[in-house]
Structures are given as structure tokens and as C-alpha cells.
Length: 91
Image (cartoon, rainbow, N blue to C red; front, side, top):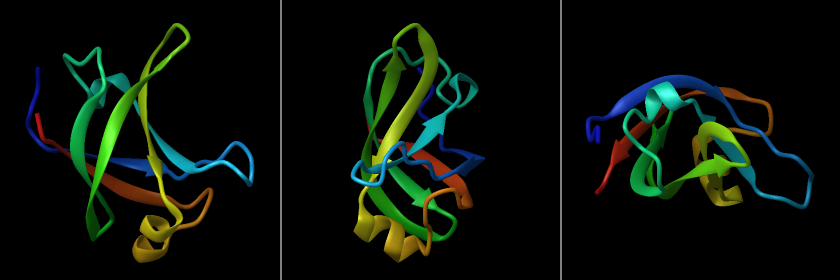
């Protein structure tokens, strides 16, 4: 299981206005992972934010993590904004 920090470009997404924002983590950035894991997440230069990186499920091999409104505000990000995500696993 890879515990090294990983950085990648991503987009902040949201399915509905009343739901939290989230970021999709492609399987290549979660090598060796099959279960949820705790991590510190940095968005551009903001953070770290403690998040749980979870498998998407439903037959997909990607992961995701939710973002709170205060975290998005601190990072200066809104829905559909692009950013650089750094994940630092904590397990």
C-alpha cells in the first residue's frame, strides 16, 4: 500500500447544490488501495485538510473525498474550479 504523498490536477465537483463538493481520485493516485483511508489533503497551497479518501464503489475503481464549504472558501475554490490536489496518507 503506497503511503507516499501524491499530487495531481483535479476539478471540484458537486452533483446538486444541497450536496457537498467532492474531488475524484483516479485509481492511479491510490495505488494498492481498495478501502477508505485517512489523509491530509492540500488544495493548491491551502490546507492541510483532514479527509477520508473513499472508494467510489458501484463497480468503479476510482476514489473520492468530500469538501466542506469552509475548506473550499479557505482554498478559494468553487464548484467546477480546477486545482492541484496533494494527498498525504495518514495510515
